[in-house]
Amino acid sequence: MVDELVLLLHALLMRHRALSIENSQLMEQLRLLVCERATLLRQVRPPSCPVPFPETFNGESARLPEFIVQTASYMLVNENRFCNDAMKVAFLISLLTGEAEEWVVPYIEMDSPILGDYRAFLDEMKQCFGWDDDEEDTDDEDDY
Image (cartoon, rainbow, N blue to C red; front, side):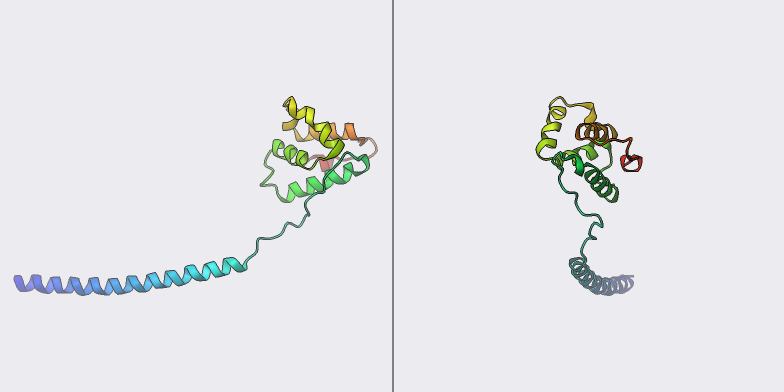
């Protein structure tokens, strides 16, 4: 019986040694794969946005349609960043300068509900900066 236990113990030690060697080999393969992955990730550049970042808007009426198209296009291709109306309005506000920036300050100071309503905010901008919806149908641009 003791001889059988010695043989069993010897077999277990041999199996343990074989598994330890296999484990070391697998760990080395894992290390090589991690290094290779890191090298590949350094080579990959994030895809660039097909739509350029919109220009700022200073209140010049003639530029309002262009500004709205630029911002709507940018938000459309980056829709994961602009998941609600408040985010869209905040983005527009971040691009306002000069007269347009002065125009929006009272809305911010009184925490106007319009800051959470993209379409209403665009309508206010159009009204203030002189875009007549009767001359041009802009429903496609407003929908975003």
